[in-house]
Image (cartoon, rainbow, N blue to C red; front, side, top):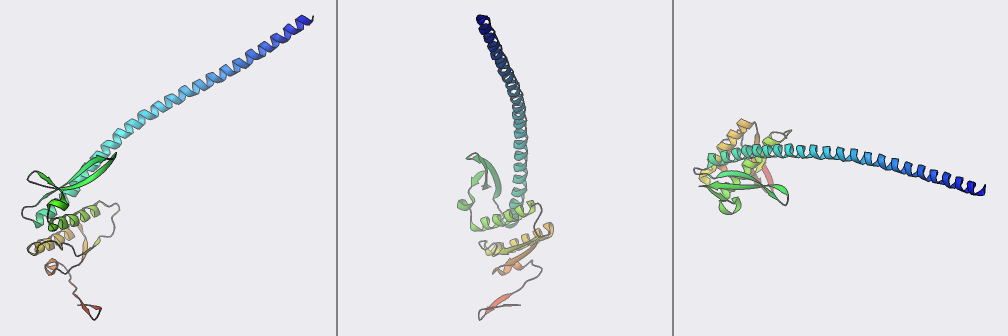
Length: 208
């Protein structure tokens, strides 16, 4: 009788152990199913992410191309208006340090030239002015259509100043921009709608 009792206890204990293992096995199965489902979800997410990345890269490339054309056209037009044998202005997008960077260069006779090292100050002056206008046209929403310029075209030779004045007039009319210019260059105000002469007397500015 004692032996049968011990055997019955062992059987119950064994069944309890089996039930415990079954529970653990079921839990493992559930975890495995969840892991498989998560893996499928992650796989789909990765594929969607890769497709989105391709789309983003294409949009970025198209945007860069449009920016290049828009800005280059405005700057090159400004250079052509002022100079008889002008440089062509180009924007080059390059990958550096895993980032897209923008390089500004001039081109003449098929040769690429660094603006700060291979051109005169008047060319750089004109290009920097035109860049400012080009960037203003790209603003969304745009700021007020009034641009204040302090001593623009100061490195431009005197014989080209009338052309710069004409450029300001044409841009003002075409883009509906009001230019307020502070300058000591008399010829730059030839095409201005209004001119105010400011003279300093005894430390006080007098406007005529």
